[in-house]
Image 1 (cartoon, helix red, strand yellow):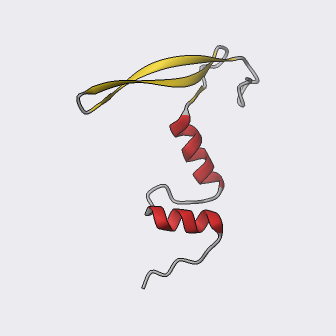
Image 2: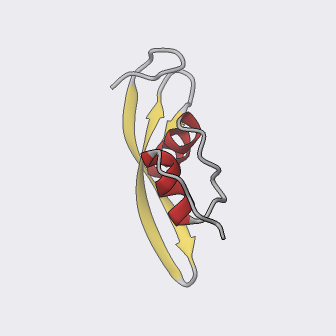
Amino acid sequence: MNCERCQGLFLADRYNVLAGVDLREHMMWRCVNCGNILDSEIMKHRTLQKYQVPIAAPVHESVAMLSGAAVDNG
């Protein structure tokens, strides 16, 4: 897999996240050239930005925006 910034080599890496009292291990991709990081949360936010969905929007509004359906707020 190649880095989208510098076309360098991505390697799989792990990091630990403290979620409440649990320590959870997550996987990410890290570029060996520029240090660019890509994980599931970053990919989710980039996808939402690509389709111009506000990240703080309620779930039903986000789904409607992605599908092109109208949302009734009244």
